[in-house]
Amino acid sequence: MTNIPTIDISPLLFQSDEQSKIDISKSIRHACETVGFFQIISHGIDKDLIDNMVNEARRFFQQSSEEKQDYAVHKWNRLNSNTYRGYFPSSINGKEGLDLCSPYMNCEHKLVKKGDPLHELNKWQMNEILIKYWDEMWRIGIELLRAIARAFDLDVFYFDKFLDDRSTGGAGTISTFRLNFYPQIENATPVSIGADDGERLSCEEHCDGCLFTILYQHEIGGLQIEIENGKWMDVPVIPYAFVINTGKCLERWTNGCLKAVKHRVKLLKQERLSIPFFLEPSYSTPIVPLPTINDTHKYDPITYGQYITESNKKFKEYQRDENNSS
Image (cartoon, rainbow, N blue to C red; front, top):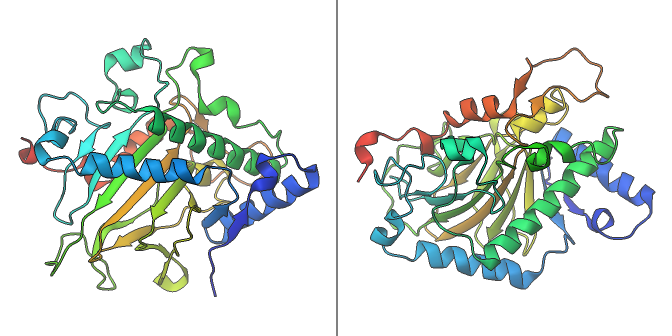
């Protein structure tokens, strides 16, 4: 029977012997190879910060439709030029979202000034709580990648140089910080996003395109992952734990050794809030198999910017009809 591992990552974050770090790193690799998902505890993120982040998310979504519309991407607000970073209004399944970029984006970089979708600036300004939460997600993300480097016999800092390219003249990370809100729906009518097994969904099945997703699912579950034989398994809610899953980028980078797994969210009759952080390399990062992998390469070389631009075309958030604009 498949289980989603829960991993205490404190040895990666705090003073501990190298063997303990190696052991945890191997556990993370094994989880990514076999399940594609795991949960982390003892991550060092203050519970008050998490609670405050939840309150900030609620504060945003509790605004009126007109107020939130000010931050909507171009398809829903023609006055905004952003097509990628911003608010995505409620769709037929009720889900709303707000996509945010790094608060440290290099505003003077040519890609930012050009208005490249992956380098758009935030319309909704991140306050101290959101910036602190971003910093913590970044810290955890880097340590997870260092664990992967360790597990693949690479220098522990191997991935660091690919995450934020500002020091070499780039615009910075294009990682995404998202707030998701799923409202309570009574007597839900059939939705356009359905599943082969008849389950009604508020988020269709998909794989993430990033390196790692770091997800906080607040109190209410609904997240499911695909396991063997096309069956689905619920991801349990562990208070103040974070759900981690492998993205397609890391799957490619490891030549398929680590697997990105399909997941979805069931349509519930309860209000649900989730806060994912998508850890992504910088725009120009070449995605080729790691140097310690000697197997025949399964994927053609590609930059992350090229890859994620193509990958995003598969998501309904970026496909909705222009007639939905207002």
